[in-house]
Image (cartoon, rainbow, N blue to C red; front, side, top):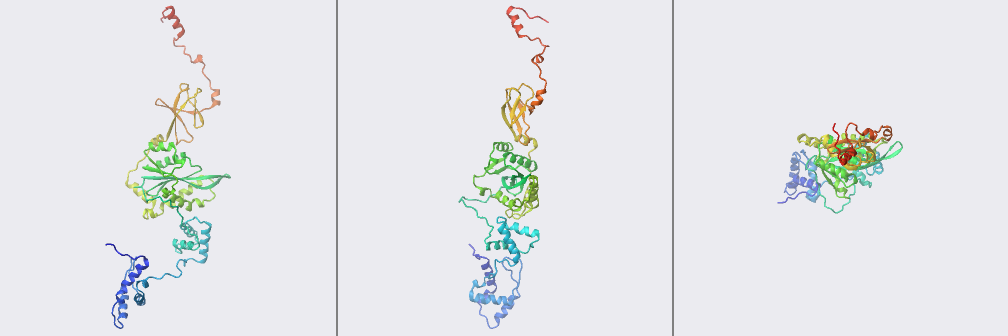
Length: 444
């Protein structure tokens, strides 16, 4: 059987009050008996709804409830709202003006960041105002921080990976440009985040968002953390290259791409970027190098993000979820040899007649002339910077080195006569002549 519950908090309190004095409102009492019964009730303890403590109510309070219920019913027992509700009584005029100025100057900064910053700066006490109080202040003045999301009509379900290490999100965020030696350089933040724990396993700043940047970051991460079951990426060129696809297949690492033009499908990563922008990227000082940016990113993760309780994690921190899981489960590790093999690229190339071969925009030299004009396999590992290619021929590995034309110009070359051996009796013309005239070969 369905139960009838109060429609809101006000009705819940009204029902509680009616339960205390309701019997008195319908009782046939003699003169003076109501006063006596109310005094008896004032000595008893009651537990208000939503409270873990009991309390007593005074005679005057119970008397007011009695007459209100008798003349106005349950509606009269509802608590009255404060006349100054929503006006933030704890906020002084100076603090209100400061909060409003910050809200107008930084419209995209979350209220949590504004409040925490003012508390750390000493301009506001932690107990002065709650997040809700500041949000109400902003709503009153048309400075609401709530984002308007586009609804495309598609059905969306809340989902999560089965456990930490099952799925990693990968993405790139465009940060503000930084000034290096007088030149503006773009800032691209690459990240890998575990889905189940929200633990960020990699966060690096680069000037580019190439596929090779993603691959090398992934390799460095796999050296530190267990291999995930799959990667969840967007459809950008950074994640659609053949090299990444082949490497993931070799490492038995699943590769999943989100639906194009659907950022909501990767909401967890987008939410992390929003936090990173509000807490770090939007407030970067005049950093003079990528190292300065990476130091601040590392500090953001270690000192704030990984230690912060997440509502989606039932109040636990990403570090707590991540470390607890791997403490009880075996990790799949990839050793350096397998990692390099997975990230080795091989292509077929023809060796020129001068024993050189082009690869990566550089001419490389093959020692010896036995491979001239031959088609060979050229290989190099994507982890090597700059690339150090080698040849793979009939199970052998032949190292290459860059061509040095000036050095080759002074190298001594052997003549044809020097290359002809005098220790062997080999004369094709004389042999044919002996056979024609019937002359037998001379015996030694």
